[in-house]
Length: 189
Image 1 (spheres, one colour):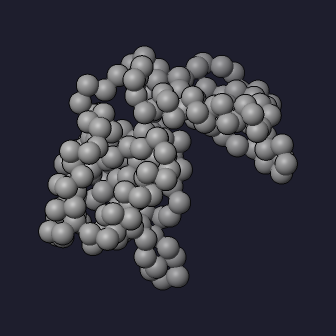
Image 2: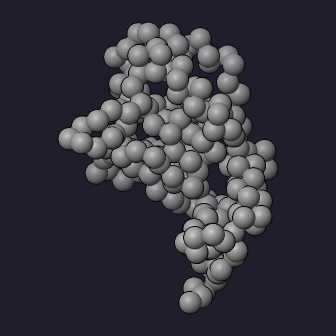
């Protein structure tokens, strides 16, 4: 199974967290303060979604102060240990050897980012927050905010079935923004 990734998602490796009683206590202490629509889990992962990066970073710091590890160096490379932050656009700032992130679409063609423990097994479903609906989701609100930012600061170049392509006005670099809905458009050159 996999978990839905929305907004800034803090993903916790449950097996690692279970080894740390202080971390479990920290999670239990904040459980009541988190909106139920921000939480989902499968057998191996717990995901908490945030709209604001500052809130997500504060949550990571609280987990780290309780003993979970976010980043560490291994063979000269920074990697995620017990927790990692992933955006709904699949952005991840450090290598995470225990996590597989990919995109899929729902029956209504809504594009979603999902995360699963690294495994050779096929993903057989996605865990959503209880009562999840696209209209009131972090997924939709986060997408709308990112679109507003892109339209103000980037030039639209072309459309692909899963992405809108924008050009950075300063650097000329192209940026791919995952759409909210899949579309059967022909790729433009």
